[in-house]
Image 1 (tube, rainbow, N blue to C red):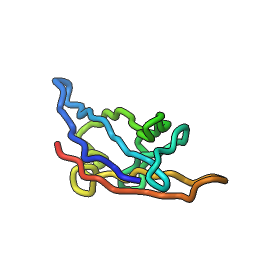
Image 2 (image 1 turned 30 degrees about the vertical axis):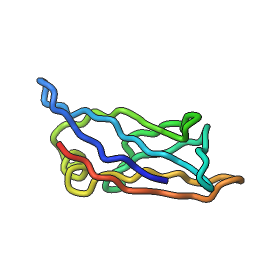
Image 3 (image 1 turned 45 degrees about the vertical axis):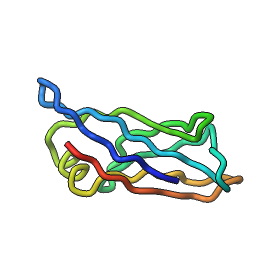
Length: 97
């Protein structure tokens, strides 16, 4: 699994929005139809299903709170829990904003 760096953009209302994205593959081939969860600092932010290219993404909107600070300081973790066919995996990526 690989996770892509993300950028948060501040809206007029003070909310930061962005898209988190990860790619799940096995033996060099994409893995479709699996759920990937995205979290920071132990807080789950969102989840998304992988498409035919193995890519899962989800949009987030956060205020300038502890979650925002955790994202900018530590980034996020994308995780797949594993199933009967594939082992669990995770990856980290940075967030700017």
